[in-house]
Image 1: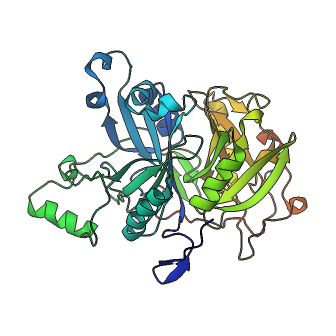
Image 2: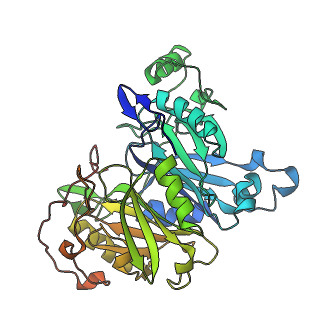
Image 3: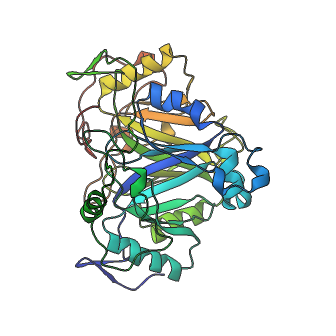
Amino acid sequence: MMTKVHILSGVESARPFQIRRLGHFGINVESPEHSLHFYRDLLGFKISDQINFTDRLPPELKNQVGPTVGFFIRHGTDHHSFVLFPKKAVEKINPQYNRFPQLTANQLTWQVGSLQEIVDAFSWFTDQAIPIIRSGRDLPGSNWHFYPTDPAGHINELYYGIEQIGWNGYSKALAMHDVKFQQPPNLPYHSEYAEVNRAIAHQINIHAGWRDQSNIAETYPVDGVLLARPFKIIKVGPVRLFVDDLSAAKDFYTRIMGLRLTEEIKYQGHSCYFLSSNTEHHALAIYPTALRTSLGLNPNSTTFAFAMQVATYQQLRNLYQYLQDAGVRIQAISHELSPGLGHHFYAVDPDGYLVQFYWEIEQIGWDGNPRPAGLRRTFGLNPSSWPTTIESQSDSFMGEVFLGPLN
């Protein structure tokens, strides 16, 4: 039991860090290039950078693993909010996948508030004897981070300072990728602004990075803006995972990571836990592996689903019809398994992953209590049956705000 009090920038805390939000998530797929049709062309994510794993592979395997290029993709200004990595290649590179063969998510990434928190958290996790795969700073992305694992093997990441992509759409130039670290830095460290100034002083073309270019015409009016699709993804998460030992997972994510237990439900006699990182009802849900078969999900993956939020109820209805017209398979999953979410549905991506789409999520106040179950919205599993308009609730349009124009 932790008794030491840490001073977190003037505030007493049980840990020397505080998770602020789920920043991004990643999956391993058979062909990232093929998956881009779903995530980029259909859903509207933009490529911010790519990564080639070829040089990390043993020579004898380079021609045996298939695709070796992965993609960092984004829905907003963060360098990436979603990651597509080549499954066979990363499984050969990272021994974590040998130890946990049903691990198909490559990262579950949490933002903290400062570089000081990353450095102190790394030391604290080490003292707690939590396995850490690696640490330091990666480019592409520029974020300072380290990767602890949960008892089920899921690779978490705590990070600070992810690269921001502005109005011109360019990520950092490759020539600026010379500041990688394999361990946390000595503090204080210079600012991002100073790094950019240094690049300019060295006559690096700071506009030589990746800029995604789409040929899809912007023909859909979306809340006053012409877009290439009749909706806009504004947030990633929650993430839904299966675990064998529910108690161990709950302990890790609450006691170690500092997430808060918002709600526990019983489904088919099994407990399921919903954990928040901020004011949202949950950013992470953990379910017993015993439910996987009864739900008809992939028996070889601990990833139940991952969610993406659109801005409005109308956009959610538009998205459903858009995916139907594109021939994407929709799968019915009981709403009981997603307490706190308003209208939502699940689509199936090219690798069989479930992607959950929603527009509204409960916000939790100072007392930590969710909305009583009897006061929640009720709606059908088939979005075709949803009404054209619905009544507003206190949580409608609330939560993490999407910053910037609807690009």
